[in-house]
Length: 250
Image (cartoon, rainbow, N blue to C red; front, top):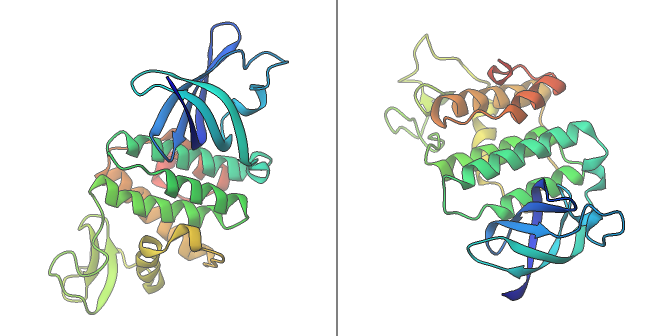
């Protein structure tokens, strides 16, 4: 075994034996790692405070590639105290963790940077729904079901885009739209594209009207249901406690 220092976030914890825990840590260097925190349930353990979900720091571990690594210590990077003290923020962060972990199981991509940036922006006070939807649309690309946001999904026309369609997989132009298509606000169309291309780390301010946020959230919920096969209870809980109208509450 070799000692490694890895940047990571605890995404889940499970009690193990009488006094230990097994942590799933999403790391920048290795993706998701299983790590045993020996004795961490003991009141006197130096690992007790850092062996909990949402611990974000530099983890010093005895690294094993194909089995459980062993936790030595953690240098905290951010305590995420604002997230941990607010049920609304916790609901969003729990969901984006669940979503990122599920997408990771279907992809070889390491999604740590997106996950970390999203959590930090929510910690800093940016609108959690906007941050969550930005991450959701980026993950659609990873899943291989990204909607067409550069041209009409039916004819390829880059001009005169009038709505976005779940059924047709993206933008629809005026020549292809039908009476059965829901017409989204033109700002929703532009925001979906901006959400995809924006660098989460560089976001310092985002202001979107509530009706537009709700339309974007509704579209993404419908899109995820139709194309990804993912159904996460944490999204249902999120929508329920925050009062968002969504198909995910069923």
